Length: 347
Ligand code: KG4
Ligand code: ZN
Image (cartoon, rainbow, N blue to C red):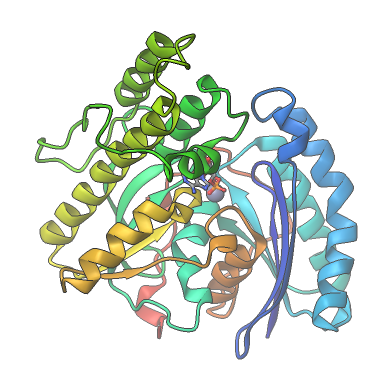
């Protein structure tokens, strides 16, 4: 059975075709980053308009890539939330219209469920149960995953998400928006022990995070440095490396604690920040020492994409879940509110 997946929760229009028997058939994406970079952040109205512009051509493109006709699809899955209301509406209207015109079922998917199942697009997928470190521009959460829809939130950021802290720090350091990846690249040539920064909430027994103070500490160090570039030529790279290491120390430290508390040994890392090389290297090093088994998606499926929505939707649609004809988006939507289907799931 072939599922068309549509992602439009923020600033990426992602389309994919996923086959329940053969896996991912094709996927394509248009990123609006250049459009929003001019304004230093995502402008919701511009995002919605651009999704509307891209959805039909990208749908044609993904079908051509897979060599199938739209009439051959069996289901449509789209991101229902969380995200920007207008952006979500653009994708969900497209999805519902395609489904209605073909007389096939459609299902609104939780964006974070898409992220946490994204490693299942790979050849060596994780098996349930696992702990997921879901770390993106809007969320930093540790989730105990027992099966499809069977999720318990173990901890989350009480202020900025990790990706948000990366982006805000990068912006202050003149790296444009979103600067998380650029800050990480710059840090590769720096000394991560050069600038002393805090590891917020590390010594607390709970699994919550806080990145706002760390971001402010880094920005304060940057402001004190600005204008004295000639005296400390490597400082920018040192600060980037030190900030990155502080964030990764906390993310990894809390993930290990979450595994210990849940008695599980599999850690899935997903969401945009899971593209971070230092984070992946730290997880790999723990795996090499036999402390855990780490899984993360390939780089292009760390950030928002249609493939993860097609896969998550396919799993649920194949178990008979589908929506009625109404179009409801959920800009705010706790992951734990999703219906559990784990009893009928064979992973
Ligand atoms: O999952 P995503 O595409 O969008 C949300 O659902 O939020 O994540 C985007 C976030 C941005 O904050 C971006 O700066 C961050 O992921 N990001 C990174 C890296 N690549 C993307 N942060 C740190 N290091 C990276 N290599
Ligand atoms: Zn996302």
